[in-house]
Structures are given as structure tokens and as C-alpha cells.
Length: 227
Image (cartoon, rainbow, N blue to C red; front, side, top):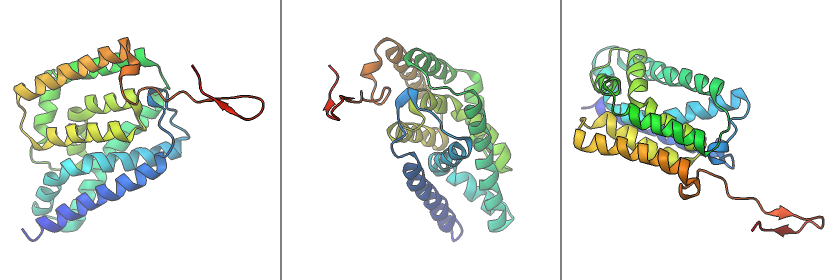
């Protein structure tokens, strides 16, 4: 108990600081699905802070178990660092394949992510992510397999959107900390598929998917809204 409370406080504190850093880095960058990622070093910094902010709250039980499993603070620190390193590698892969995109591409990715939520592969990784973790690297691989569909939703609809990050964080943390229940998980997956359909058919109905239209500027420097 003496170790558990500090470990929880430090892990959640790191997540809170990461939210602050991430929001500062991303200020003004959100353009929905058309968001550019910027230079590679900048994106890695944003992604690393984003992953720490989103994923550490759900990793608290695993960190506490690792602390109690032997090795003390040093082992727990290495566990967290290697866990975040796995997710950082995912970010590098995202940077390699990502392009600013339109609603159709975003909708297709979201639909596929929803379908993934229904697969045995997803269930397998979710179960392993909730079990005792021997190393941060192994735990990271299992949790990537569990949460990759939800993260693809974020990348598709607005990788720099704080609002969508909050939604995906809640879902990721809930899936890490709560047991799988078909009565909850199946409707969630179907809702994600439905979101993908709406994105494709009526993108203007999805909050944050498309940036607000910038006002036109005439030769005198006056702004005129688009009609």
C-alpha cells in the first residue's frame, strides 16, 4: 500500500503533465482529417507526449504490479519507458504512411477500426493487456494490439484534435481497466462503424472533422465570410 499510492500518483502526474505539454505543442494545428503532421522531430515530440497523456492512466495497475514484482523504482521506470517506446515506434510508422486526407479515406479507416473491435485478435490482445505484464515492451505490444483500432480512429478524424483525444482516452482506459463485456463492446464497435459511415456520407455532421472555412480577404485587407 505504501508503494501503491506514490506509484499511482507519479504515473497519473506524468500523464497530467503530458496533457499540458501536448496541448501547448498542438495549439492551432487541428485541421481535422486534413491536419499536416509537420517536421518529424516535432511530430515525435507531440506523439510521445500524446501517448503518455492518453495511455499512462490505464497503465497504472500494470506499473504498480511491476513495482511490487521486484526491482523497485528503477524497474518500474524502465517498464514505463519501454512501454512508451513501443507506442513511439507506432507513431513513427504513422508518420511514414500518414497523409492529410478527406472524409472518404477517414470514413474507410474508421469503419475498418470498428470491424477490428469485433475480431478475435482484438479480444486476445485486450485480455493479454489486462494480465500481469513481465516487461514494458511486452505489455506495450499487447496494448498496441488492443488499442490500435481506437488510435486509428483518432488518426483518421483528427490526430491533433484534443476533443477526439479525450474521447479515445476514455475508451482506451476503460478497455484496459474493465473486463470485456459483449453487451458493451459490440455496440461500441457498431457505433464506430456507424461513425465511419456518417463521416463518409455526411462529414459536416461530425464535430472537428473538417476545419472551419477561413474568411476571404479582399484587396483592402477586409475579411469577408464565405457563403
